[in-house]
Amino acid sequence: MKKILYIASKNPGKILEYKKLLSEVNCQLVLQPDFIEIIESGKTFKDNAAIKACEVSKKMKNYAIADDSGLCIEALNGKPGIHSSRYADNDQERIKRVLSELEGIEDRRAFFIANVCVASPVGELVLDIEARCYGNILLQSRGNNGFGYDPIFQEKNTELTFAEMTDDLKDKLSHRGKAASKVIPELIKIFSDI
Ligand code: ITT
Image (tube, rainbow, N blue to C red; front, side):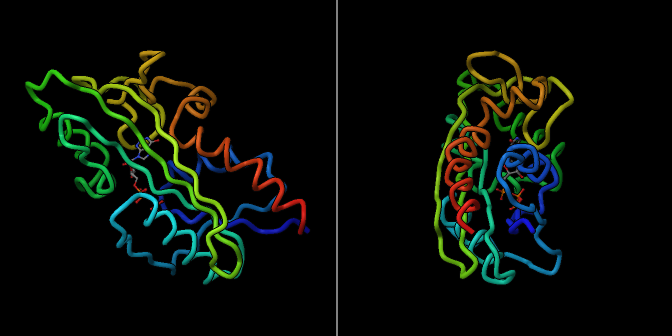
């Protein structure tokens, strides 16, 4: 029987991406049970990713993977940053808030960041990887794929928004995809030993 890896997340967009990204790891992916409520009390992406992975792994007595991610906008001094998921009530409102805060501002540089953590069945942090993807915030949304701020984030090299990319292209270029590509070889080792 395959060993279990919990995805410590309640974000459907992220979960979908992890199911695809982690398909080559020989494990059974299980979602974080609803009863686990985690307070993201950290001051950094790393703190929050570690809190999520460690709490779920300890409670479920299995390996767990979590990410804390967000959009950092230069002209807004890094906001929404670690508050990206709490910037307004839903994705549409969050996009509206960012666009209104950037109204009249020429410098649209931004990056997405993901801190991915894996914790062991006793709640010990075993992996911690950070990755970024650079781009610009558009004046209005473009594209229908993805989740969160994807429609307003234009990736620097392709000039496509994440919402205009195929899943495969987003996985190759995104903060989460880049972090996952570093985590996967380690996970393959962990899950081949047990
Ligand atoms: P979990 O903690 O349960 O995983 P969450 O949505 O609260 O879900 P975070 O605290 O890490 O997760 O917040 C990340 C937010 O940053 C997310 O809700 C989006 O608004 C935004 N975000 C992160 N990665 C993104 C991506 O690939 N595309 C668009 N928006 C993204």
